[in-house]
Image (cartoon, rainbow, N blue to C red; front, side, top):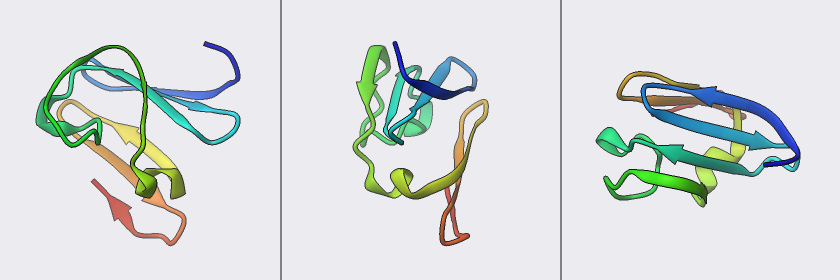
Length: 77
């Protein structure tokens, strides 16, 4: 993977923020923490199409959760 700005990891999940602001992820999807509208694990990189997460300022992955501080100062999780 190229053009990676940041990488965030949680319990079995990884999200990469690319230089253009797009998000790619893979890993366990316990409780739908990967924001993909299902509970299936991802064994290869996929694009996050959740438009809410594209407006994030900070992103955190935990054991069974993900949190994002959005640009409007609200929290997604």
